[in-house]
Amino acid sequence: MTLTPSLLRANLRLASGLTMLTFVVCHFSAHAMLLVSVPFGEAVLGVLMAPWKTLPGTVLLAGAFTLHYLNALWSIYHRRSLRLSRWEMWQLMLGFSIPLLIGLHVVDTRVGELMFQKTPYYTSALVSWWVRQPPFAALQFFAILVVWIHACIGIHFWLRLKPWFPKALPWLRPVAVLLPALALAGFVAAGNEIRRDAAANADFANVAEADSNSTADNKRALTNIALAAMGCHILLTLLPFAARGMRVALYRRRRPPTVTHAGGRRCVVPPGASVLETLRDNGIPHAAVCGGRARCTTCRVLVTQGLEHLPPPEALEAKALMRIHATPETRLACQIHPTTDIAVLPLLSADATAADGSARGGLEGSERLITVIFVDLRGSTTMSETRMPYDVLFLLNHFFREMTNALEATGGHYSQFTGDGLMALYGLDGDPARGAADAVRGAREMLDRLATLNRDMAAELRQPLRIGIGIHFNEAIVGAMGPPRSQIISAIGDTVNTCARLESLTKDYSCPLVISRQAAEAAGLDMSNETLHEAVVKGRSAKVQFYALHRVPEPA
Image (cartoon, rainbow, N blue to C red):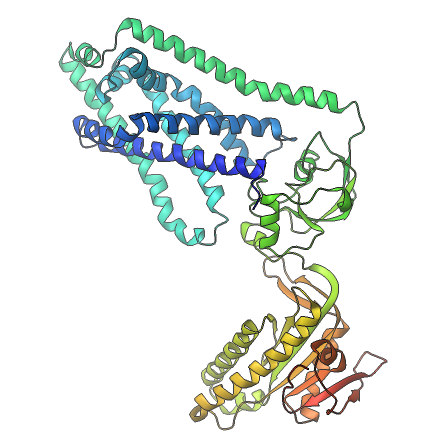
């Protein structure tokens, strides 16, 4: 896969975030050990922080922070609309508040260590917060919460698209709550301990500061450095907003492209904006579970006009579209940035979930060539009359298991359950004619598995199970159908009705398989020695031509 700038930025954002999260977990774990005692917490902190105090560790952590920070600034400038979802807004606000909350602490410890040979101890830091300046203790308490919530939001919206994540949530939630809770408890317990020691010994605070080489001069210098760093942070945060304003002013000098929504709204595209940003900026609800990062595919749209003017999908979008088997007309609204007028049709509802994003693409109701197969179990009504309900269910479950296994083995797609039978589709992917050949293989596989099932369950059956199979190949409307939360991939139209009629003809001709002439030709079967029949199908004026077969033929 080509490493595009967007893909590189996404990978760097994730890697830098995970690096800083590792550091935070180490730090919070040491805080939790303060519940035992301050000396024990100090010992644990020395072990956990040792790798980060080496030159490679310092460079890695500083580089991760720089990359993550610059990416956040770029994301503000790069966005063409600041109408964000609630979780995106919270993540940005919390993220940009972190330098203001921990800036003084970082400068006082690591910068002080490098510039003034300070030795940062828990005791000296706790004296500074809980004895010298108690309001800063509350600030650090708040900082722990903000850092952790910001990290958890990012981790949650990264992992929520993973299929294993829902099962792991019951195990991850306690960790997400327990670690910061223990860290805060340790911080408060140690602070109270330090305050008691300071109250009992008037020289305690002075000795602790002297041990860490904390003097009035270096305190003043480090405070000035911290204030300067915070000022730079505020200016840098305002910079992308100013740049956005300049960009909009320049863009208004020329006619911008438009996006026409399926609902009829025509929206002007802000400079460089994606379709998702444009729709949200105009108050049109549109799904985007991952926040527009080409992960969830819930923002997928059908480009009905102007597709030829769009550049091909880049790596992130191409990977996501390939995962859902999307058609060329299907694109991700978060990844396309129109430079000419286009029209789009949303393919998922605005309240789509992460699970909806994993649904197969390219099946939103299009007319296409498809092979339909109907399978019906003979004598099921009589079997139900002579057996207990549990026994009937036991036999049917075995029967449907073998039939669906046959479908999976031959590339078929289970579509509908009909009580004592099923409907399946072949040819959803690739050459439709190949689907017809696969359907014939599927019929052979079903009959072979049925013979095995009859042999294995002979003691349970009064007479062998029999099935009738109908196969037809023609155009049908294929797509995701049904209620929004329980849709299935199916087909409707004359082709389906004809196939159902062909299956019923297996009773009239006392044969296991009836295949239409179109399906036989598409599958490449040699039917020169078979009789071509005709029958009337209800609702059709023309007759359907078919072959009634007692065995499944091999392809020519």
